[in-house]
Amino acid sequence: MKAQVTVTLKSGILDPQGKAIEGALKSLGIAGVESVRQGKIFEIEIADSDRAAAEAKLKEAAEKLLANTVIENYHVQINGSVG
Amino acid sequence: MRAAVVVFPGINRERDMSRTLRLVSGREPSMVWHADTALPVGTDIVVLPGGFSYGDYLRCGAIAARAPIMDAVREFAEKGGLVLGVCNGFQILCEAGLLPGVLMRNTRLKFICRDVYLRVERSDTPFTRGYNAGQVICVPTAHGEGNYVADADTIARLEGEGRVVFRYAAPDGTRAPEWNFNGATNAIAGIVNQRGNVLGMMPHPENHVETVIGRTDGRGLFQGLAEHLSSAA
Image (tube, rainbow over all chains, first blue to last red; front, side, top):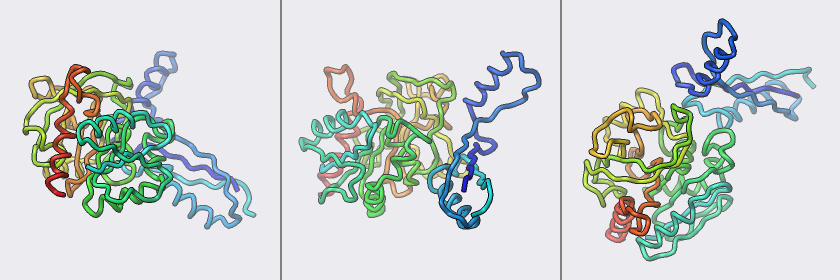
């Protein structure tokens, strides 16, 4: 099954890249942009057919490698049909 | 000094580091491959050099921190063995959980490659016994992600326990925002773990050890380590 793990910076952590992107959007004249925070999305295919097992593995992956939980939060989302 | 320099794919400072270790200690360090699972018998200091392990993919040092050799490095540190991480090595130690916090993108987003001034905050560690507390040293730096960040409790603990060993400063040792070029919290350039046997620092003392280069300010760190290890042996 297919899954997505989204990793974002925790609030309060300075994001200079997000700030630079925010500045670029403003200079393009895109109105109303109040703030930008940059993050990452991992698209993962996992062999498990059991949703709960897959979710547990993805959480382990996020904790151990995909996110640095000192500065980042993560969110696991499993797409598609089970089995 | 029986140094082991860990070599990860993508690092590029391992030869500078091993040259300096050899110069100061008179002994050739072992080069240890990341996929190895043990350190050479008799190793008394492990060095994680600088560079761009795994192309800085995911986060700087993140993939190297999970390399097979790191279990042996962790075990070595837990037994009190000395571990020095420079630049990417510091990032790897943070990612491996051997040091707290994380090195984020420099606040002005630029890769900065130039000589910087560090104030040595204490001289009573194996890493800094070659210096005086308050001494200012000039060493090169070269990184895009050296902005030290940790939560407020961790920073308070590091400061309270005197674990900030090097700080970015002006040439006269005073602190000023313009000399904290990467935006690091409290101008932190190098920290030790609670036990004091693991040091991580962003700048490169190994590159200022020979008069032919112009400065030898980095030599004190390695000389001090060599003296510490020979007195311990």
